[in-house]
Length: 128
Image (cartoon, rainbow, N blue to C red; front, top):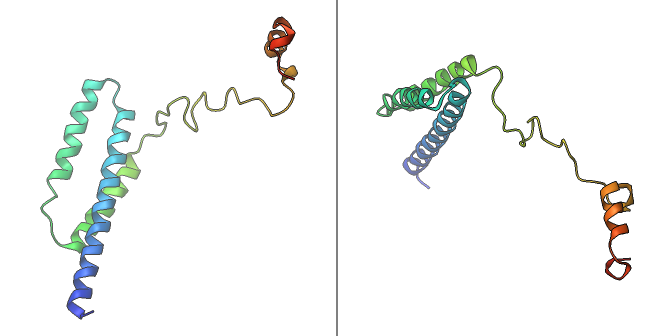
């Protein structure tokens, strides 16, 4: 492999990593915008402003400048991140997550409803 090919491969790898970091930063910032907006119409306005901020810098080609801009954007995101983000109730960290855990394996007679159901079924339909 020649030096030029190695340099080109390194440049393309760096650009791919930068694009991934920008994509992740944009998605995280967009999701965090939902935490700050009370109503959906406010979110749409904020999302448009956020997209415009990303669009103004998409023409930059210098890798060092891009790295610096990404670092500044991540620092600004961390500074303005919502202190109490919304978590879907049934997701990990949500208020309903594992509220009703699955019963342990074994005898189901400890569950009153199931015990009552087994008593009400005719004996031929129960499983032993």
